[in-house]
Image (cartoon, rainbow, N blue to C red; front, side):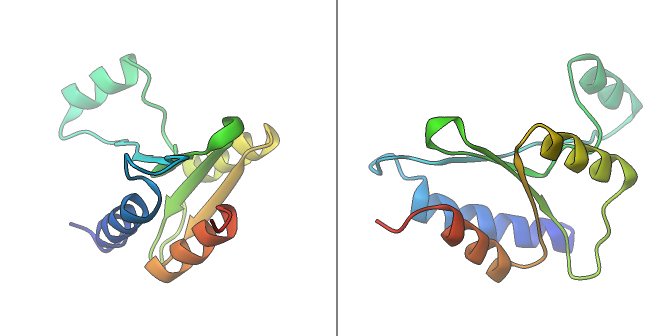
Length: 117
């Protein structure tokens, strides 16, 4: 696992335990977008079936059709050109796009997005 994967895994576990339990109303949905393949054949298959370079690592679905795109990076991590293009495209459509560089930043962003019950 990469350092980004470690941060992302911690974020997903925390989020699902706090906002994504089946007993919660509303139940928020956070999921990852695997955007790479093991080899050229798998990459080709994924591209043919809709994979798009640069899509954010996580997508958060909230009530009333609100969708948030979340890119995970380490403190020194840099977005690729395709990630920056994707960010600009979704922002032009009116969506929120967040780059999170730590678990603590992720918690802060989520707590700012989701109203306290």
